[in-house]
Image (cartoon, rainbow, N blue to C red; front, top):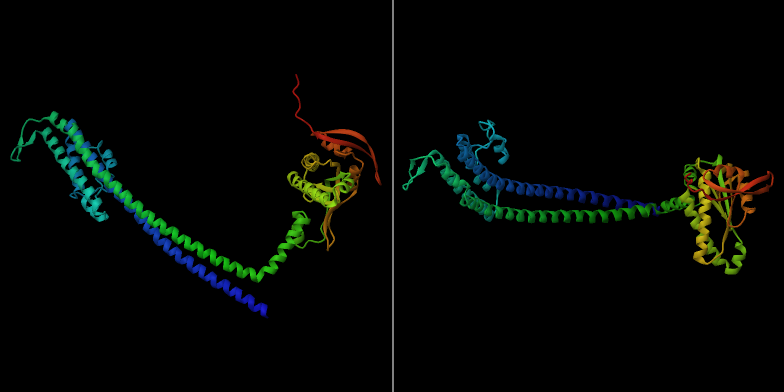
Length: 474
């Protein structure tokens, strides 16, 4: 009963902290949503500020374009466009719905009349600047640029008047005279005109820098707040998660440990597919495999070497060597069955049947033979491996309950064992049918007949190695 109450207490902790976590994360999401809106507002403010500066700049450029076209061609539509640009900027005429600064007028110039799209509303550029909420310093710079642009517009108007023969006398009255296109062109193409244009752009550039600096600072502040909220959310999530994990762990640790140990044990002693079948309750597990390759590998003279170096050192060395064999078995798709003393048994095509089982086993056999040579060089030993293998039908399954093992049976197993025991050190002895299967890709050397108990004499071969690429004929 005490254990039951303890479990209830930990489950209560779990749900309490789960509720705290959900509430905290929800609160953080609300704050993040608010900060996100502020970031969007800041980005919009920056964008709209640039649009206003761009409108002033493009408006000045468009005025220049129209006055120059007028003084060069004398076409009255360009003066009309000039006056319309000023009227829109001063709020005397509504902006067309598709008013996009320079792009708008680039589309209008080839036409005879401006677009007939209805305007949105009459608002001067200065009014838009006030609504945007610039700092006093930013507003002063943009206002200064507009004033200089308006002053230049007066010069441009005088140039157009000169084309029409209209001049201003000393009293400020308009008087008629001879048209002077050369004077007008000098007024809008001369160096003084370019200096006026430059004077407009200087405060405009300073304005853009001020806006850039202000909005960048604002964005950094908002980003810092976002990171702070995210960090708090992560810390809360981590803390709550740790507490919940501990609570669940304390309630289920015993069962989890038992399950984990069982699965680990199964994977250590059984192939993964067999372990899965056993976990799903399949029993007994026994499969008849029509074709599989079987290998036995024995370390020659291991007993005498043990007497020389001592049992503990030799067991350590044997463990290291067989560990490398295990890695190679994974590499070549071969399944280790068991070790009996210094004898290593492996199969290919079991438990999962594969058509190239013999090739996999041949590659594995050659690899472990080479690995023994490397092992000898590293540890200053003279181990020699004697390998035997063949293929055929086998029965594979799990035997035992207390100390179960996955094993294979059949005449093929006995023949493979006999191939090993009657072989030679440092060589791989195989049966004639194994040699026939491998002869296309591997070099084999005929040896002698071997007497296998209960079967009779069998012709044997040595597996020498892989065949090289065919030489070109001359």
